[in-house]
Length: 591
Image 1: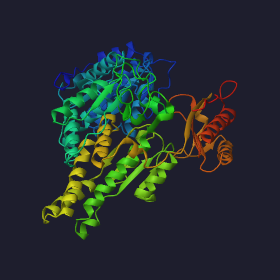
Image 2 (image 1 turned 45 degrees about the vertical axis):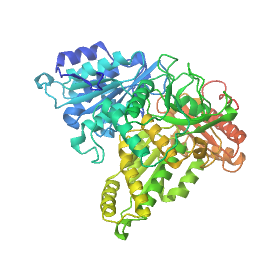
Image 3 (image 1 turned 45 degrees about the horizontal axis):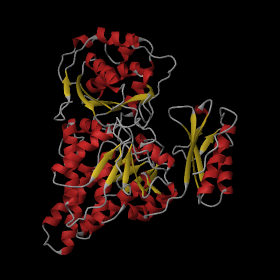
Image 4 (image 1 turned 60 degrees about the vertical axis):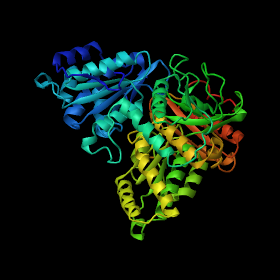
């Protein structure tokens, strides 16, 4: 990618011989079979990934040319995993994750050991006859891992040999790559009219910065809050945030946002980043961070698609540590959007009130019970859906609302705006334009302006740490609140997460939203008995990991001691009834 943010264009070079050469040079690893595409894409030890990169590259070219006939994207990253891992995610033309039909095919391609069968699956036997035009386009990006460049080069070589022109975006965050795909396909109707097309990395930063500055400008006399310190997980989020801050300053907005934990200052995701902060309920390691305020902080994960906020008021003491995870972000967003709609409704004619868009929140079983109670008070019970764990499941469920807010507790989420939202905003704008100005009308017009800006500021393709960072900060500024005011929306119930290694995770079966264990027999009854024994508000559930032979455990209770005891008992139940490995389950340390 050039300094202007434009991707490097690598023209298609169709060659069946080159495809066969790549497939034979990078055969499947028998120790990794079968390769599975979870909610995070293909992800394994980096040494096992070259063969998958080749197959994903030719699949992406096939999908862009024959299945979707629009540009698609490929991101090389392993997100919150450590440096030894790498992986690859595929984006469909709408900027979202690859649809189920594509996922099914790419998994088939990834596990097909016969080269000729791969060629047949992807219609590559006649690839030499393809013209080298731009009808098939594949956008490629990568994170800062030491092996990401070589792996991305394999993706690009395979895609070009399969007849696709490659747009190499170089080092970008995962959400930026998804943004570029969505905006490149604006003519296909994927990009709402309220959002101006910005189909490259520079445009991504400009759009976020302009939308953020415009949103802040809807309130006069804003007094700047304390410095916002961001832990970038020693990953791609660091240069990305620096570029974003530069663009914000270009908008004459002097907000103090400081990026820390650069790629060279410490190990990627090593005792830092959103995964570490959220799972350990503890501050990150600040690698080379100057002695500045840590009262208002955020943490990205390794590819900057997750974010959590926290306050480390004094030193390293966990007693002064406050975590605001995806649940708190979801509640803040829902509250703000609901309040803007209410302010707008107050000045609209009666016939438009029938068209007010629905606002809803999607949670997973990992959502804190206190968050669900709070959202119920804001949205009503019909405004909450519980979806299966995994961003592709919550993203799909969010489309059932006109304005769908989804966040997993780990900080991955966004806000989706449907057609009814855009139609309502347009009608409201016309109605207010024909109304005499009064104080109430002015308030409604401010609310309308804020609602119009949200789709440009909130990444419509995928969860985005940079986008969510700016919206949280803007809301707090507009409401004149601190991180502590926000944290006071509700008090989290103490919770604890753990995992138990098992011989075969596939024997564990759950219901659709993963709140109940259906198999093996007796597990659910034992969990319920343990929950009752720990007192009121106790609940625990288990689910198999999507990528490794472990069972993930979540426990929640009225007190910290009860939550820890329930999590320990759930570990014992899983180890006993689900084929745990070793002499016994892990003993959980007290938090």
